[in-house]
Amino acid sequence: MTWKGRTAAGAAALLLTTLIHAAGPARAQVSPPCFSAVVLAQRGGHHAEFVATARAWLSRLSADSNFVVDYIQSPDSLSRDFLARYSLFIQLDYPPYGWNDRAQAAFSDFIEEGRGGWLGLHHATLLGEFDGYPMWEWFSRFMGGVRFVNYIASFAAADVIVEEGAHPLFVGVPPVFRVQKDEWYVYDRSPRADVRVLARVNEESYVPASTIRMGDHPVIWTNEHVRARNVYIFMGHDPGLFRNPAYTTLLRNAIFWAAGHSARPADPRETR
Image 1: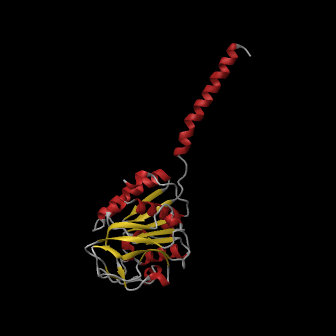
Image 2: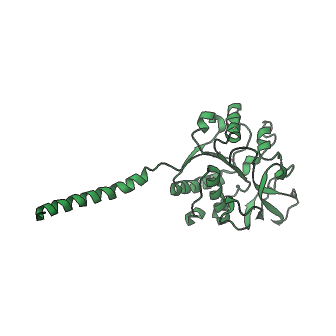
Image 3: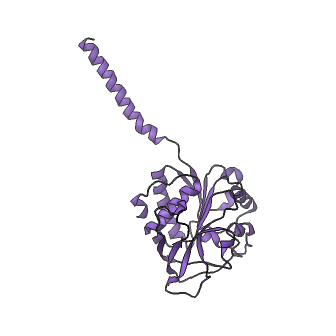
């Protein structure tokens, strides 16, 4: 090969290498998301600060982990076709009342048929007659047959005791972790007979001490009588929870588990 030929070949190789390097990041940027999640979350109310902090945290997590998060502020848009777009439904401090018949039917089918996963936080067990709405009996059964009866309105710190440390939700979560501020709902009964309890609160650890107790007091559980992967996590009132590594690790694990995906290692930014 002549010098001129070698030069031309080298230029062609350089051009090909440049094109490959240029195409690499572009391919990474257009890779399809791992899954899509829809989040039902109110903008206002006394959980507004927690919801705003949760949304910022979810934005970082979804960007880092390549999944899509869409938000709705009312269950009115829920239908079978709407939910078919999503692998995960997150009920972010949204109560189980005031849903129209179509939304109730679409959601219960989504859960019972296992067409996606569900993660509920805090307000999702505000079950009873509120604001003129009747009890949603199906949702109460889904949550282990509970009815809300009381809560620690002045807040308390407490220890959460993990009962099933081998469950994927608790990878990287200590067996006992402290929650500095929450309302600690009390129900008319423990759901333990009808759900798989994963963690409970130690009522003896309340600071300040409180007489508002229920004895056996589960705070994290899953209902294995439905086909959908599902988990309820009571803690979800104080935005300071997102500075608690145990909580953010638990929440991240719950999202990936309920969506049917493996959680990646924790990113330190998620606790900021």
